Image (cartoon, rainbow, N blue to C red; front, side):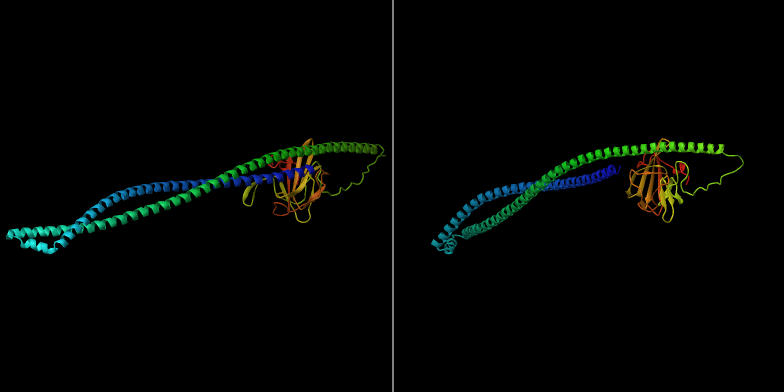
Length: 417
């Protein structure tokens, strides 16, 4: 029983360790999935920026094409304007030569003085003014066209430069976004590979956990079989004890009959024997300890909360011995975080299996597989495990002990405390 229990504890411990790793892998998978979602969100955001940037690049390209077309048209206009300027320059040169050859403004005076009448003079003055105004107009147009040409050239060159600079910035931004997107895609790919690897590891751990569960179940079956074997030993021991008791009773009856027949008469009586005081009760059961009952079997309140108490608590001060409540075999003796130092004993009484539990002891004096008689000391009352003062927590089960306490019975049905 001790070896089986140790194997079961080892398997349970290994299973808990594996289940802890499974939970860890699950947590890592969840974190990886969360990172993947975050990366997908970032990639989506970058894709949106890329699309917006590509749209802006297309718009700038269109504006550049339109501006280039304007420049080409302007170039044609400039060529046309250059021709006009050249023609005006030739005309001004011709006039300048004519004025130089004919004496400049003196010729205009000759024209005016050569008038035959006042009306002719007025006509000649008007004609001269027209010629002078025409020359001035040509010169003004020449200057204005040159200024306009220079202005248009500067504006178009600046506009084209701004557009090309903006397009270059957008293309640089697009290149940066493409690089970011590629890096995020590579990271997402790595996370997918990591997730796949974690899933494989988790599956392997789950398979190991399942195998450990099978081993645990198998060991539990072997432990139950061992407990049944011990219970059968207790049953056989009970039968043997009854047979011996019947034989001793018959022997005492025969001896008493012989003593009565050999008596010579008269009334004589043997002095009454004084029975030694002992804590062990008559019958199959006896109280496991002396002390005060502090909590009975059934509903009660602990730390302000309602709970069902599956045993009977006996409290006392000092060094208080704990006894086996009936004949049987120890099926388990160990330390539990809840029960503290605890002993489990299996009994067979009138063909029925029972299990008793003795919890919170300061120490245990018995080991697994050991046979005990009713009233044998198995330990001392204590305050170990989940306990709030020195006492014995005593449980009685009709059948085997179960963690659900489904077959726990009130000890007062069998024991007079």
